Length: 87
Image 1 (spheres, rainbow, N blue to C red):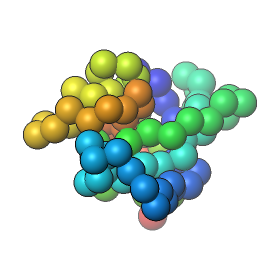
Image 2: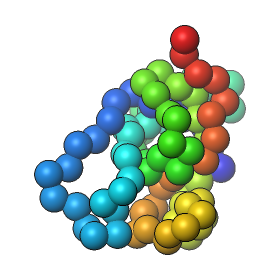
Image 3: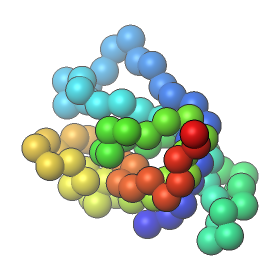
Image 4: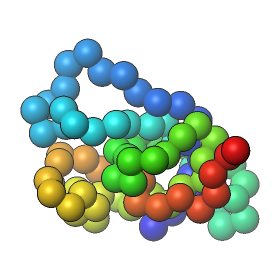
């Protein structure tokens, strides 16, 4: 599990059928002191309440697909928690 900051969202005109119901966000990687790292990635929103500038926890690989309760989507990164929300 890693920390990240949501810096944007992704809109796709065409999606794999297994991804139709999911929202995706652009996440800036953060270190353990919540300082920005140079990498960014796209993560599926398993929480459903994530917004711009939120600090989140992200899981990868098989854990990312298992983060969803009713489906197992073909994803490699999923947001599974909100550490701090912007108001």
